[in-house]
Length: 438
Image (cartoon, rainbow, N blue to C red; front, side, top):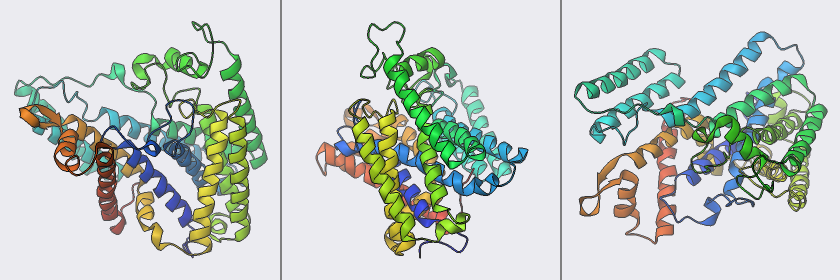
């Protein structure tokens, strides 16, 4: 069987690994063009890429059931809430670190790129050891990086500090942190039926807010307009345009109001976890039964169908995290978890899932450090054709992949190479039993 003696649900680890691998894959193409399944829907609509983030929030919900399940039967102490808050803050700060490290503007600073890169790598290494709780090593590396910045200034290079006035406040990990915090507290205080009622109220309320509440400054309020919908207006009002996603300009796909239905996505995972744990604790979830798998499949099909029906009145939209999108992707999450549960925990088919076990064991590390590497590949400049500077990513595409294939296939080949490179690095951690957890 796929479960361990400690009651660990291997199918959930595999589902997490599949999801984080998909997230890294779609975030790191070689550049446009890319195949449509690797792109988000332009606005309304649903592509396979749009499944990935709700899958991850669903998994967060299942994990909450397992990790906090025993706390429901007893009165949670202050220490439980402290751990929840610390973990949420840590996840949020990891998201911010991806954007802010190395704490200066790489292109605007005129020191040699190689020197700046060394400082960047020192900060990244410091973060790695900080997450491993090896605080002395992390402090030494951070001090070395800060000394590098000081030396660059002493060498009369102009080092431009990171512009915090444009720091994006929300983001993928930032949303995960907020959703984890709220969902964990709800889980500790409400029963499964109450959580279901809360979810229905949020989804219907969000539907009403986006369709009935007029947006100031807009002649027509409609979710079909990226600017003239309530979620985008609140993001511009509270976060301001300087602190929302630059690609959105007038909205943030991980904004404030749209985080409410994202909490429901996690609650759907909580309810799935409660079902898998029926009859006991986490060990009961690892005791596979066909009944548990069948219920996952049945509710998955039901929610998926309901989401597509609701889509006719309230279109699926990942950026706004619409209610129909929540229902449909929760259904897809149940179906994928059901398949993994049936194949791994019920039938024992586990060999195929090894790469995803490796990814799932260090999902946070994979997301954080692959994100930092992606920024380095875009920021670091080398001499390209005719001696013109190009990004390292551009150089690799021009000299390695584009001579081999068409642009769209070259982009795909680069993305696959990128994820395989990180599979090797995650395998090194996995084989040494090094796990980065918050």
